[in-house]
Length: 122
Length: 411
Ligand code: FES
Image 1: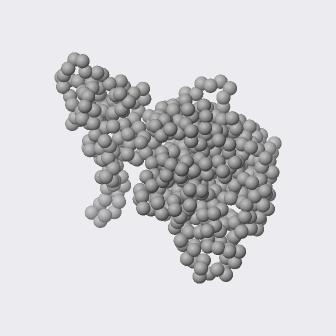
Image 2: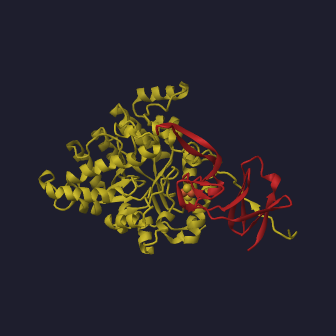
Image 3: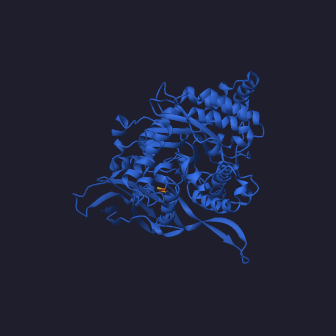
């Protein structure tokens, strides 16, 4: 396993921030949210698309009232998804999981911060 | 941390958008093609799209009627805040990119600096290179709804102008950019003229009925058209689409629901009428191709029609065998969007339609549910020979296309 520097913490601003890098033919997306860094292989389990190079959207929820009537949709303030640009599959940046199918998940990459620098290990 | 540690290189594209070059957007497809060794495979993409309205100002020049042509010119020149001249459309077109999540569906505004090359040729070549395909059949996009035009004569005017514009400016045997000419199906005589005009054009490899329409395909008024198409030796294609104003589909409140049903519904109805009225018996050499409805509807309809037919044969007296026999012998299918969430279901589907000879690859690029060739390549239970048939050989046989695996693919 090799550890590679991705960049300084300051490069990951404003939040949510992301840097997609190439390391010896492997592509990795490194994301920074308020609570820390997350890294995933840039390879969508759907059809192999460049998932980490997609747009970032908050998860969408639907609100029901006490009578179970729909009051429409809203964004979840906490949960942030990366959207694969090929067909739009979304994955929670923290868990790597598809919000509607737990079995569909991105492949994690170890990420750490030391002395203001961000590293991934492959 | 060790000072000798390497620094990773940032990818040139950090976030894909509407301005991303097609080759960057599809770089993963290209990498897969290299790994899979597609250089010596013949790959034919039977259904890709361009957005004809980007060039509507060129297309209207091909309108034959001088009064309409003048009207269209004035409209395109002076009118603002309205869709392109003469075109109807569908509300659903606004939702296809899932609110900006799928930028290549919204538009392709990438830089193209190739003097003397038509924009659509340049963009198509890029997609072909990335997907590693030898032939790409181009279909229009908003014109897929033209069968719902309130003026049948306008369907004919615009279809003719589009077919001519495409043939003169975009189609190219050398590049492998081909089309299935759009038939103004609501006007059978005009549709026959389309066949007369393009029947011998080698870049027009068949004829398309845009399926979103309320015309019975077995009506006697179409028999001359089918005879003419059969005589060209080229197939007739039914390209699916949706129609959100259809009273049943209007109950669907999401594009997800409406599109899931709509893109299948039109072809379910047309196929039912096509088979039960014995069109394959009347025109045994006429092949039909069913485009962009996915595949899971086919086993459903085969089983449904077979069961009902046995009880009510007197209502379909032209048939000499089971409806499903016609559906697997004289009908061809494009795979996209391939339903693959159940391996059991997919295996049964491919067996039932006899995919080895009847199934053709289609990308539907650049639409939101496009399929790269690996959707076929990755099917675990197919042999390499079967994959080669589906990705190219079946289409090459159906359309008489020479093998073009060559320089561009090997690069
Ligand atoms: S490959 Fe990522 S959504 Fe399809």
